[in-house]
Each structure stands twice: as C-alpha cells, then as structure tokens.
Image (cartoon, rainbow, N blue to C red; front, side, top):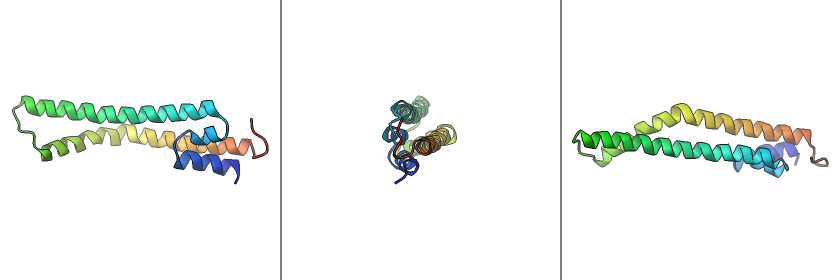
Length: 113
C-alpha cells in the first residue's frame, strides 16, 4: 500500500495524528493528536458547564428539575458545541488526513525521513 494512502487511512479511521506517527513524523502526529484531545476536553467542559449553569438557574428560580427538563437543558447545551467547536474539530481532522496524505506522497515507501 502506498504511504500516502496508508497515512491518510490511519488519520481518518484511527485517530487524528496517527497517520503522521505511522509515517515517522511523530512531532506532527502528536500535535494533531494533542489538539484533538484538547478539543474533546473543551467540548465536554462546555456541555457540563452550560448544563450546570442552566440547572442552577432553574433551581434558584424554584423550578422542579425533572428528567425531561434535564434532557432539554443538556440538548440545548449541545447547541454551542455543534455550532462552534464541532466544525473546528472536523476541519482539524480533515487537515490531519490531508497532511498525512501529503507526507506519504513526499516520502514513498522506500524513502523515509
């Protein structure tokens, strides 16, 4: 299999940055992986913080917090993630795939850096 295809598949199917690591560009691979992990952490923190603040406001107003209200609050907090963070993460993932493919084209199977 060509290095360009192998690197792109690793980055696309396993984890962003894994294609670069397989192609022996470890610093770039760890950069893509660490930004991806950071993005996931930011998404989780955003959902938890938004949900917590909304539920706290409802509790201070004296509203009863039922499971249906809780699910509504969680789904509304996901809107910020879907609107801002997720598109950036998808763009970063795509850049990782393209970068791994370009590295593979630059260094064919018999010529590694």
